[in-house]
Image (tube, rainbow, N blue to C red; front, side, top):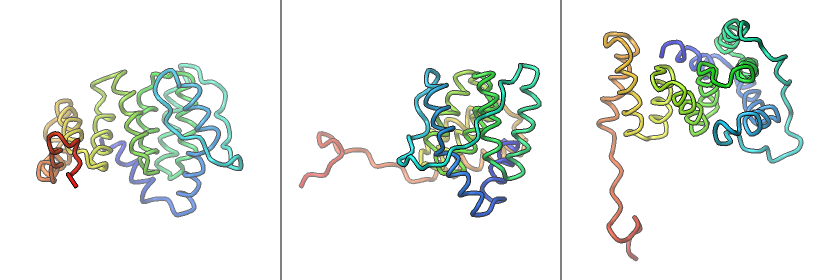
Length: 205
């Protein structure tokens, strides 16, 4: 949706090469690995691969655990950091929110936005799916999942996500018009060729 699109644009267009480098370092840091492989391991499959070098820099750990009354203000801080082109600060703040409330779908979805900006669509989709398991009608996650699947070339999956999104938003909204345009594009995208029967998709030599 528009809120998430602003965040994506800020990451992909607003930051320079140094910002992108910091984002890559942050995503492969011990903080990211420890949080995603440890704390939420019971919630969904590992999202960030183990760094290959012990020299990988570590990010500062999230701040103290938030109380329920502090989550809304923390979300505003995270969104502001994302819009200001500081995805690392946003990443850490969203983690802090999820430590306090693992079912916070807005934080889950925006972590997916950051992963998408780092060209990690598969990991982003897992976060969108996690958010959608918690709330199947969360339009932001459907919009972002559709975008991620579209980027991967999964026309069928993207169209399904977009159609679910359209069922939840006003048909004349800007987001709905944009999504309808994407669905039309996907309908004309090349279809994968079916595998040859009896050959498991391999050509006979």
